[in-house]
Length: 324
Image 1 (cartoon, rainbow, N blue to C red):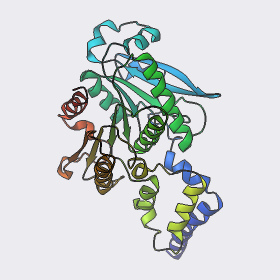
Image 2 (image 1 turned 90 degrees about the vertical axis):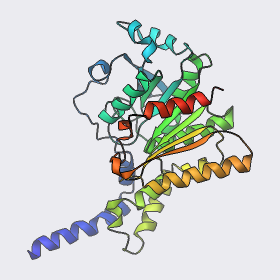
Image 3 (image 1 turned 180 degrees about the horizontal axis):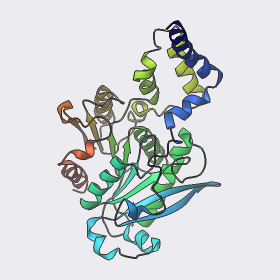
Image 4 (image 1 turned 120 degrees about the vertical axis):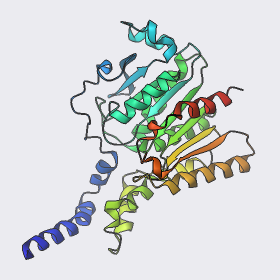
């Protein structure tokens, strides 16, 4: 018994020591890109899990190739059989809104909750492009905040080039919410505001998620541990500051958050909603800002908002209001 207790104490104490000696480990945990769930899906064959979908790759910068799935809107389903990637690309100019889906950490674009959401959006009449950032899935390279943001930016500009003026919406879930707002800020600075932003289970900053995680809470009473985490994130340039980004963004915004989210606390979504309302007042813009909250009794937690039977209606109402 004494040996078991001593072992547990040793393991417990070793975590902050290991983080101090090898700070890059925290980045690996945040991205969790090496957990390529589901393991036995061939990402080059999206038809195994998702109909009316084409797989292709983009070189977002020298030496970096990222995998993308393009899922067609319902209006194009019947025409899609045995069509080429070039045909899929041409359909982006059919006037239908395009949603660029930026997923969270862990796994690939083939994880079930991501596939189920894409099915819903496709059936609702939208093109959906699902991106695996560098280092994720079958994409090359190693992840970083700047790298993920650049991948999203490249895909956004690629879509804009081929969509002939169609509305383009960035949808970011969890980690992807930070990628989405980072990209939106750069786009707004360089040209004009992104057509629309949808943030699902968004956080204020990734650091706040880390220090409030169930695992790290076990260490918060240790002197200096929280400061260690913040210093490591600063050192590794992992910030993903949605709160800061939304203080300048003027794009129409829809936030979706479940009250029983066990990864990103619900209050963070509320805080971002309030920040966005303040931004609209401060900058005197009329861009639409909306938040949809889901009761804890529904059990949607962090990744199951796609189970809302009215989700397609919520998205349709939000996007259609932008066209009037």
